[in-house]
Amino acid sequence: MALDSEPSRVGAFVIYQDGSYVMIEGDMGITLGCTTSFNLCAVQVSGFYHGKLQGLFGKYNNEPSDDYTLPTGQVTRRLGRISISFGFDKLALLMPFVLRPGDYE
Image 1 (cartoon, rainbow, N blue to C red):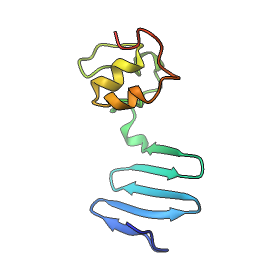
Image 2: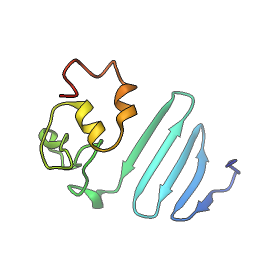
Image 3: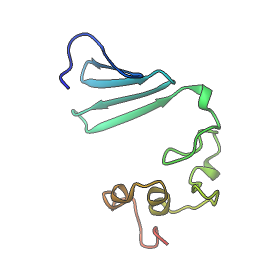
């Protein structure tokens, strides 16, 4: 999809370019901004979701001790386990600089 100077609506999302960023804003209060200049993406979530999330970005409740909660409710400290449990097997393999021996146990 080529970006025009005007925002494009695709279903519940508005897609537009803001300088070097491509922005995707959802109607439900979630925004994703990516730039190829730095190979970087950022996610912004509305405060409405405070304490209502779970996954790779933590629980969004300002409590770091439970950020790595698996779908089963078990808390782990192993990044490999959390990424695999949420279906991001290949993501874990792309981050060898973060993972240490035993991160998958």
